[in-house]
Amino acid sequence: MAKQVEASDFGNDFKWGVAISAAQNEGAVLEDGRSQSIWDVFAKRQTAIEGRAKPTHSSNFYHRYKDDLLLAKALGFNHFRFSISWSRILPEGIGKPNKKGIAFYHAVIDECLKIGLEPVVTLYHWDLPQALEKNGGWTSHQMLKWFSKFVNLCANEFGQKVKQWIVMNEPFGFTSLGYMLGKHAPGKMGLSNFFPAIHNAAMCTAEGGRIIRSEVPDAHIGTSFSCSEVMPNTLQDKDVLAAAKSDVLLNRLLLEPVLGLGYPHMENFQFLEKLHLHTKSWRYQQQMAFDFDFIGIQNYFAVTVKNNNLIPYLQASEVTAKSRKVPHTQLGWEINPESFNRMLHRIWDYGNIPEIIVTEGGACFKDVFQHGVINDQQRIDYFKQYLGAVLKAKNSGVNIGGYYAWTLTDNFEWAFGYNARFGLIHVDFATQLRTIKQSGYWFRDFLQT
Ligand code: NOJ
Image 1 (cartoon, rainbow, N blue to C red):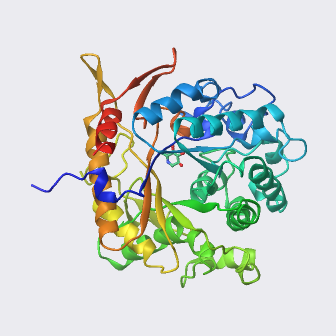
Image 2: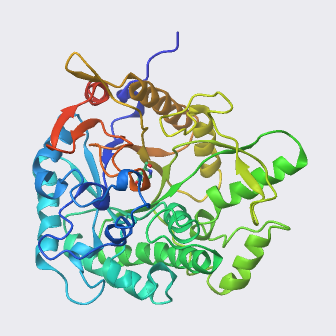
């Protein structure tokens, strides 16, 4: 039998973290001067989110951060990743900072430092102030200016204490779901929204990195991307083409500009031709690049696709893990640690990434209450397999510096509302009672090895 993976196998300097985000955890959406974010407004649409859930209270990190940080520490983590709510510190999006909002993040950071958790700040985790959305949000040509002001404020406020920075969280996720498919806030659709959103996200990612580097001495700066290996359903040319096009979108579109390669090229992929035309990328190639200290990688599923001429541009649709009868999570996301291992290699093989950090990893399963404990064996098995994949890649030369579990407590899972639980700690949303799941205890024991 294969040897069990142990934390010590990853070396002493390996960063073991746990991650949350502002919109998903804080709640307190209108307290102490915070203004609405696009998610607060989007959630008011009756049909937008499962169970008509709203982020209004969520897991109430705003009031419970001390307890939650202690729990993160008790589970053995040494890094804590959280994001800054732009609406909390700059209610108008630009202009006058909100002192109480800033004080909250100082308190979180101070508490982390006090109990021995290294604070890791994500600047943008999908919750734009509604005040900016009113003026076009991510589709506006003013976005770079707005974002730069926000980043400058964060750097100058928190840079003395925070040395670990992640500029952007999964830019393909929020631009495609929020500005192309209308499934996430702000619910916009179509290429006329998607193209400018992509381009602004690419520009802001690099510029954010430059600002932190100039304002924060000794900062370790990264930015996070989602990735998913894409397999063709058959080896027929049309399925192989569908997979190649999907791969461009899921894995290359926003990573390659950062690495200095500009937007990807692919013959006869009209979507890309239009994007190039739209953004005249040759002019921006330099501005979209930045030499990040690390690239954050988040892999939640592998996908298999087949040709489907009904889907514009992509001509591809997914063949679900369920229909192929392969292991998957509650959300139907394929579990495939080998594929994760291959993605880590593939990203490393670009050759100009100094370090990879797995800035999120985790899975959604139904929690089973048994004799007073929350038995989430499937989540434990998931972590064992995925950590095995990380170790394998690390041992074969991929410089992987850390792993952040997603997520500390159950929280607001975007369009899935509160029914999709990813936490190591269960939250009863009616009472806010926390109960450590077996996976949380498993992590605690694992991190002691
Ligand atoms: C990645 C996102 O960053 C996070 O916000 C989300 O909860 C997880 N994926 C799970 O869907």
